[in-house]
Amino acid sequence: MGRYLREHAEVVAGRRVFDLASGSGLCAIAAMRASAASATASDIDPFAIAAIRLNADANACRVSTIGRDVLDEPPPEAEVILAGDCLYDADLARRVLPWLLTARNAGIDVLIGDPGRAHLPVDDLVELANYEVRTTSDLEDLQRTRASVYRLR
Image (cartoon, rainbow, N blue to C red; front, side, top):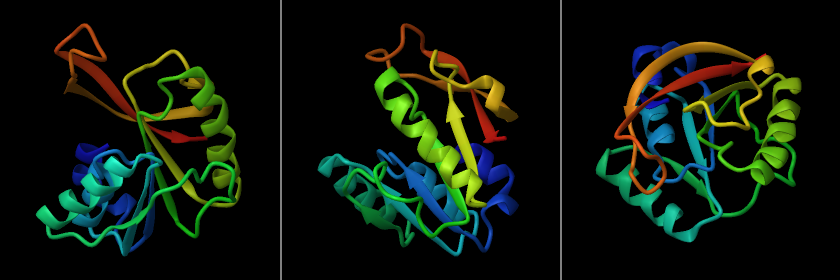
C-alpha cells in the first residue's frame, strides 16, 4: 500500500484518509507523504498506537490515532479508507468486510492491500497494482510474496 501511494499520490492528495488496523502506521504515513490533507490511524493494540506515534514523529508526519475497535461504529469522516492486510483471519474478515462495504456505500474510496489471503473477496475487488514484497518468517513460509492493492467495487 505504501508503495502504491508513493506511485499514485493523486489517490490521497488533498483528501482525508483513515488507516484501518494501522499496525505501525506505515499506510497513514505514506498517505501524508503523498500529500493527504490528514490521516487518522486506528488500531486496537496500545503498542501499535505507540508505534504509530513514534513512526509518524520519525517521518515528520502528523497522524492522528484512534486506539479502539471502530468496526462497531459508522465509517469515519474520511474520503479514503486504507485497509492493509486486514483479512488474515476469517472472524476478522467477517467484521471488516461489511464495515468497508458500508463505507464504500457512503461514498468513501476503499483501498485494500493484501497478499492473497484466503478471505479476500476477489469478486468484489478491482486490482490496481501488484508488487513483490518481503514477508516475516513467523507469518509466512517465504521471504518474499506477491501482494496487491485493490479498490472495493
